[in-house]
Image 1: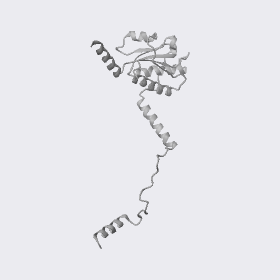
Image 2: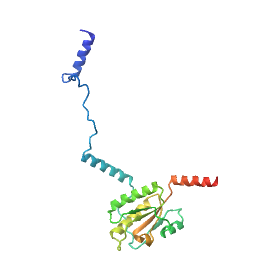
Image 3: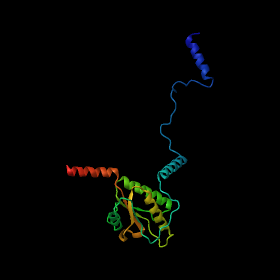
Image 4: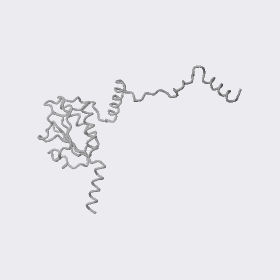
Length: 199
């Protein structure tokens, strides 16, 4: 028996009796041509995972909040922001570059909407935005609950420099004007403009 025959016999023994050679003309595995459509359960799991990811990135809290007075205006400015900025915001001196309506929405949906809206506004270098939330006549009315949460959320956003209840022509106590800080990109553009003017 030749050396090649010994190798062939050892190879066949190693494979065992269950392995059979392919028939002539069938030397390729059968593979489906196109990708399979995901099942409904796979799509649902993917959507659920995306929601969890979004909620983890969303640092805003919808836990207990102290209710604001239904008839009290809200306003705030961060340290270093001039009082004139807040005064101008309060009187509608900055045109709202974008608006978000969250009236009659559940608190959790309001939270997600506010978070996404402010992130998008900041990413697009918007400075002044308006959030319309409605108003209640009583302290524990639904719109006042949302307004109270909004106050808390705006304090948690580092990009928010100041905010104030809107003037009557823009919604009054049923809307809040928000001033966002300039992004690094916008600051860099301002520096370039100033250098060109000097040069």
